[in-house]
Image (cartoon, rainbow, N blue to C red; front, top):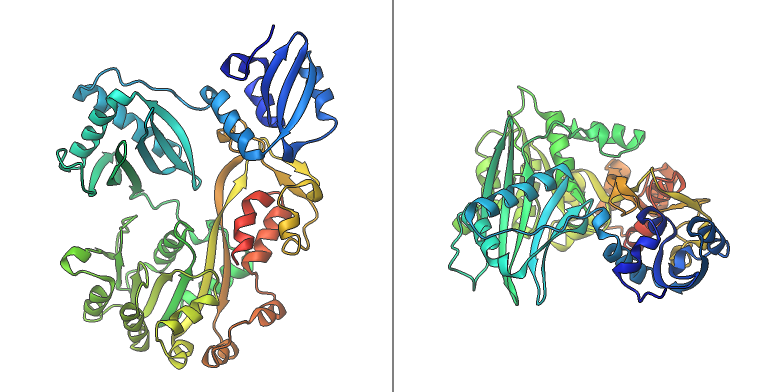
Length: 474
């Protein structure tokens, strides 16, 4: 019996075995099973193990990791993905399907749903733990009717297919409300839709559960208790900065504080806090809102983001006049925030007198405890590229993939932080516009992003592969 590579041969291996060993069936001729194997998992003893498992004589060939991952997803998709057909384009069926994917995305803790059309197919992907996973395939002929249903729900113009549109869908479930932001973009083979899922349930957001170590938590709680000044959180989009801000507001929210926020969008609603939605189309910007906030007798002000010089200047002014200001900014490191504000035209003497703390953070995926395996560091792909950064690492775990983690090898994410409280010594370095304070941070034992990543790798909480892009950019 001989097979060509394809779905017919997939049954030779169970999905668990295929993902565990990172192998793809390529051909079965007589009693010889030829398997393609991820080069990162290559080991001389694997063939013997697979022969015992399968009962065939096994021949292995090495292939790039990306290729094997793609083949595994294709061949064993039905083990963790659903192929769904919308039976007709009538309102009832498309309505049910839309509600179904939203409910499923919420259950899987997905942040976004991507609905996309291509030449030969259309698909729906969920963003889970920061990565997109294909969840459904839609018949091409039903795609437009489904998109129209989404647009109707979001109160958008179904006749307009040439221009981008933005809308929202509100879904109420008992005491919880899901606010879905809808973005429609015209593309080559049909409109692409992204649904951003926002929930008003903030009960799970607590400073203690975000990922700070004991010292960082103590330092953070100290700086947010100061009655005035600025606390800035930096990091790329999707690094969890807003969640840290909400956790901080929950800690500071009491009867004696007047707290005002300007956000884009409002991701969680917090009782006792006055939250304002940014609306640039009518002139309600971060800077204009902040100007009005100062006439509202505030104690604490939260700005979703410092994007420009005017907003930065207004934030400094608010801090100088006795208010505590919390905000985010796009920089790669905690100390890089200082340089960024100086580049915006903020004098160093003002920064030194108003900045309470500068914080950098990232989100990193956690290895699935059900399937991760230990591996010698020298055998891990990418190790040589960042060997110097991994000084201090002794062991490493790698992702495998199982039913518990949708065969991604990861389950959940954790935030990593670098927190620099500003004292007199560091304030003097800000005034001098010092560009590198790594020696000082090390002498004080302050946990940097790099040090925290190495700790997580050593503890088996994340992998070298997951840490790689972070270590390259800090």
